[in-house]
Image 1 (tube, one colour):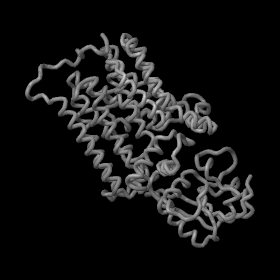
Image 2 (cartoon, one colour):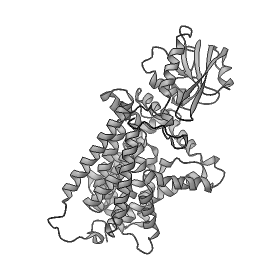
Image 3 (cartoon, rainbow, N blue to C red):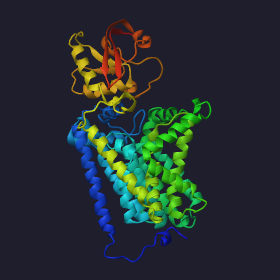
Amino acid sequence: MTMAEPKPALRRAPATPLEIPPRTWLVWTISINLFIAFTRVLALRNSPLDLLPDEAQYWSWSRHLAFGYFSKPPVIAWLIAATTAVVGNDEWGVRLGAPLFHAATGIVVAFLGRAIYSARVGFFAALLYATLPGVIFSGLVISTDVPLLFFWALALLAIWQVWSEPDWRWAITLGIAFGLGFLAKYAMGYFLLGFAIFLVIGPHGPLKAASRYLLLAAIVAAAIIAPNVIWNASHGWATVGHTAANANWGQGGGLHLFEAANFAVAQFGVFGPILLLALIARLVLWRRSPPNPRERFLFSFAIPVLTLMILQSGISRAHANWAAVSYIAGTVLVVGWLDGINRFWPIRLSLVLQLLLFGAFTTYFAGAINITLPKPIDMFHQMRGWHSLSQLVLHRLDSAPDGSIVAADDREVMAELDYYLRYRNFPLAIATGNGPPGNQYELENPITAANGSHVLLIARFSDRSDILDKFSDHKLTEEWTVSAGQGRRRGYFIYELSGFRGG
């Protein structure tokens, strides 16, 4: 059996007047995804929440476009530059790419489900994707996962088409999707792992026909990735080094089963308990009911990355979202399998629960629910207090010596001050300790002899002798605390520094 043959597992009865045409499923898919995006944009417009530190940092990058940055490839900065150029630099403008890209991803998921199974499967997979617990949060926050998931989904659709019905247009699409996905986040490289697994467990017949198209895709992808490689080479491989340090494989000290178990459990919160249990059930039933080529394709791009991230979390560390790309294929697989065995109730139940969660989360994010969340469940604490901090800085500058600059000793504080003091008429710099640069600000905007004659330092930590010793005079003038929600307060130590000596 080849990939282009009929789909015997999903043969249906002849069409009846009650059967919904594929075009209708597609219209509903697009309409619902656009409506969800519109709802999210409204929530962003009305949200009282500040930018996350990473969001503020990406905004800083977007002011100076390049082919790479210290800790990430460039697409996130390009995306923010595009949205803020259209609607302005308010928080919702910075985040606007998130709902728009997730809507586009949902539509691509629908086409993927339609190409592999049916238009009905594509519709429900798209709707489930748009309301996955992880996407509910990601749809309102700009991050590197936002463009990554879109390009991953597009690459999945393209490589399925190249494999089943080789065509040069899909080959070019695959190359573009992989290349831009890699420039969104280096995790796009896991796509190659998925394809390698599929070459092992999938049918080998189509490989010969698809090989030249895959080569074309590789050439297109390499051309897109090349400028970032050149940027890294000219900047001491900064992003590559940071990515390797982030994985931290050399410091794990063996396998930590508790951390691996925590990561695995967290996936129920990212993908949703019903869908993840269904995915596990299909995997358990592998030997009893061997997967067909379609399922083998989807398994190849769902399970390996998830497994690798569980191992990563046990060896070193892994954030719960690091396996997010697994759930593009995972969603289509679960819907297609349950539809094929006429057990659709888990899909309906999961969809109802996800829609309820989507409504509650989006409403709270928009500020329409005035509830103070308890500290243990408050996931928004990093989005509070930064605007208040900027106002304290402005007030404190009134009594600072003329010509003073403001400095931070921390990447997160620096990013937030750069954003919330974006209309400032004074310089902003970062105070560096000993050792090599650890972020983009330390590379490009440190305190120097030229700007360090008078410095107002906003320090997260009191013991910063590595910074203070670089000045001829330093004085702790006051301490601030800023509320970040119930039971959470961030402390700052305010120093007046003068006479930067370097070192």
